[in-house]
Image (tube, rainbow, N blue to C red; front, side, top):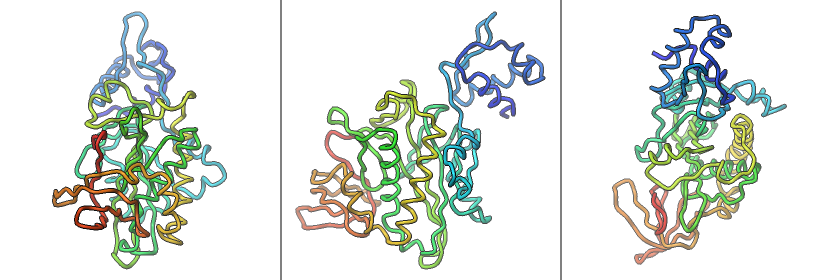
Length: 331
């Protein structure tokens, strides 16, 4: 079982400098054994803590933890509009919010975690997560419309992420239909963020969207090896370090803005903006549907509902869901 001391200790060590067990024991008013036992649990979460006799403990590099008060402060005057909850460790923020949503969790809620142990991507994939390397969170938005009217939702979430990345001077990001954010580098599409949406409620009545988002902030070589597709992270495209609390605040505001427009006017109002970020427009693509049938054709973009139009040898085909890939990109 993880010690309640672990994350306070990690916060203490977040400057990346050595701190003695004795000094930390005094600070937390516990024994040195309690410090050692708490840090022993770090390894099970994939957190590397160096221990050097005579110097003490330190992290491999400085760390910025996710903290609720810092997110709220960064959101600013709109902070009271949102319910923000920060968890140290959770298996899946989407699973957590799905359970809480049934109990009446507030509209416009964001649950974010420092470490997600069993994050999920699309089609059963695992979303790899590591302390200080990813921003993993879920956002709850209640719609007065039913699930049947929410076609294109994942696309507008992608628009929000593109807007947020632009605000930290990352202007190269593109959108892969229906829910990945990519950056093209040396003719390879590399994933910087992903979206997983799960809906609750009626097809025609009120519905709740659980919007899971993972953003790579500063991937280590060790983490990149674990990921089964080309990836990149914010740190590769910015000269200044990005505080994850500040960036999450930006994303929350942008999400609220696009979701309000989407609820009012549907995807059509945002279609042109999505198309301007379309990574695969006019390229030859392969689309694999849920029954594992793959169709090849020229991607023509999306229609007013957010479905993908593809020109094939058998004529125009329209896809409401599927997995898209192009040559020079491993999806």
